[in-house]
Length: 103
Image 1 (tube, rainbow, N blue to C red):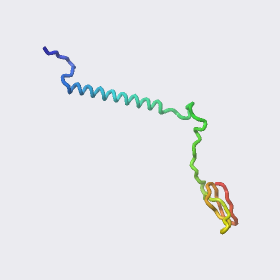
Image 2: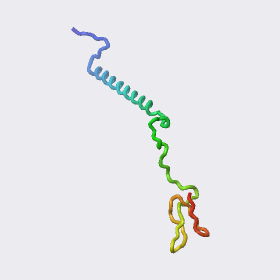
Image 3: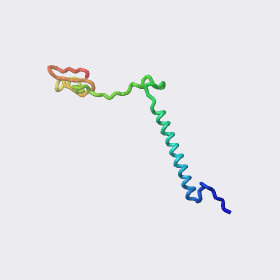
Image 4: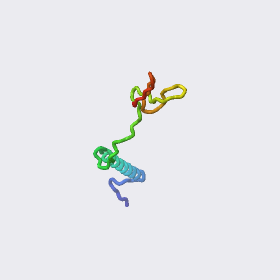
């Protein structure tokens, strides 16, 4: 005697198709939940967080020379007299003597 089941899978291939569909739908659900968690937790404004350090807004700024700064300073060379040598943050001019000013 054969039992007919309406809507029941009839062979192994249909069973595998249903299993794969379940796995894919579960995987898509997990990915959607993880994406929603990332969006919710990743959009907080850092300026309003109670966990910021008092120094968090301070960062290392690049050392850039001001316009017109040649990054040299005055020194006395025994052979040449006053000349300009490499030095960060100074502007050197040799005209009627040597003058060095901060940039």
